[in-house]
Image 1: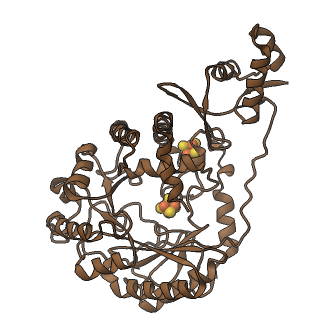
Image 2 (image 1 turned 90 degrees about the vertical axis):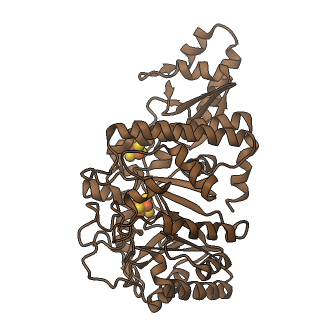
Image 3 (image 1 turned 135 degrees about the vertical axis):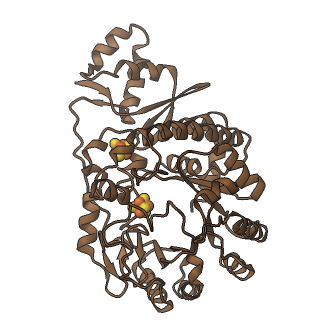
Length: 477
Ligand code: SF4
Ligand code: SF4
């Protein structure tokens, strides 16, 4: 029986080699003998085990043992072995974990890249068919719907999204109060998160966010010049000078009393210096974490990243990853959250059947109570999946999830990034290909390079300070 290696990724470190096995999403350290065996079986046509053992000459038993171990972990398998790809779903109806409430489709800024105004808006989106704000009654009914749909779960999450979320404090406060009451009555834990442009933060809302332990994400693009380039009021005046004092007040009041507060930076071309930008947001302003979101889904607009921008972005992410690794080796936390999130997934052995929780554990609610796959789909006519009064249309949900399963995406079958990518964002696929279940093939090179960067960082940290990852275990319950 001929054997050959399965798809894998190697990460050399100072003291050895780690290997990532996408079939099982596992990472293991290899010794020199195992690397030799892996090298020998890295051939398309395969090799008989007996032939290999005959040619080794020395240490046949040891070589046979290593080969057996590599077969057991799935790094080497029979050439003819065909694993019928299963695209089966977990038992349905799958209990909801997260509801994203679009409490306001209005905004007091007019950022140039906002998808509310952009070419990546889907058909039907934003045509004034829905109320601009969610009523408190709809917010309350949405919370009822979440608790009814979260059977068997101990933890549920409510994320408030917009437009600018804080334009509708009434609905947010009503939803939080109701959710906490229901959590007490049903012995569940409820968690809240909110994204805001920070223009409307005041002492009242800061106290409210801290009291209810909100995870807060603030959209800010760096120093004054970077930020004001796109994030301006409708008058054209930049918003940096308005938001930074308010953010500082929030950070000072929240320190140690709520979850880490993150900056969310939208990256446009020409790219700024990300290390400088990171230093400004963490050291000068005081954010705990910084996450970067490149504009990718509007190729015809001046600000969307193109071709060479991705090389630059990767080099800059690589520099930030070096800083992250250096901090981790000294046992410190670094706030580059894109990498932190990826390392957590690698450490937990995440092996995604679907790119994200949209339509599975997570759904979005439009201002009028219609349900969409996530916050990006919620205002469009693409893939509505019910409403809060009648619940999820389970036939549509199942059909969507079956089509979106990674094993239905032929191009992804041999990709080493499959466990963390699974074809990429449905909404981006809908914009690019008119089909949410299409793999996002336009950015495969980027995803693979980024995943490789994460794997190398993971291996370097594991090599020198494996206890660093215990913090992920402590916070993942
Ligand atoms: S979309 Fe591309 S990068 Fe992602 S899993 Fe599929 S082939 Fe890999
Ligand atoms: S479909 Fe895209 S935008 Fe929506 S939750 Fe998934 S990754 Fe996010």
